[in-house]
Picture 1 (cartoon, one colour):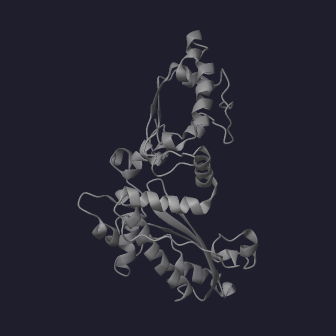
Picture 2 (spheres, rainbow, N blue to C red):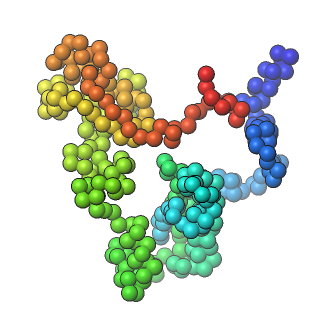
Picture 3 (cartoon, rainbow, N blue to C red):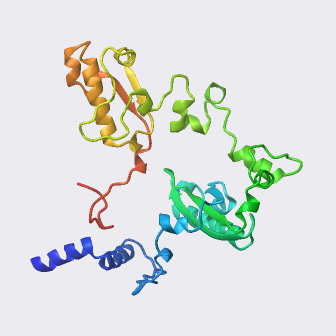
Length: 310
């Protein structure tokens, strides 16, 4: 029995096929799922580009791309709103958000490759990423057949503009730009603006700074790192006069950043009191803000049956 259990643990940890079947089994046990199928590829196509992102040599074959396009999911799309149940929010249904985004992305790629919106295209590659709130966005590189003809001021001005469209000539573009692409007002003029609840507010509020800029946290960190703050400097004196530090979006930061700041504050605050070097963050009150539900636990070799940690 011990040997069998050891083999099961080993297979669950290392064998991808076993992992796939285990995931299917767990899904059936957790929910009453009827329409669910598992597809295993016995042999893949010899062309690795079908399953892998292009490498630098693949991209270099086409030269420099002509267009870099970013396309972001909008949670206010009608297709998303109509699919939500009463009381649901888009972040509650990432499956709906992802499916609608995939449909719109496919339509966009058809416009680029089949219908030649920017002219006949010879190659395209893209990478989909997910934001902290679960909204997907895609970065697209597009190569055109006639690059030389596209790269002139008149053509570029036709497709790329930093102006707000004329509402009388392009009311659809005007509504889209004014609703989703114009920032502000915020700050004292509009304290309820969405950016006042995000990390970008640190650059907009009076005296607001990012933590790496304010405390000179190194970009490359390890478990012994400290901030680049020396005793006797203006920044050190300012910190010694500080009683409260508010750190927004704290769950997004690596623990080494907190530990580096903790060591530095203990050292700086010990100048005004020897007992300060034994207090967390030198005795300064720290307020950490952010949505800790965004950080999912990672259990090496864990299964879906694991619901909570002891």
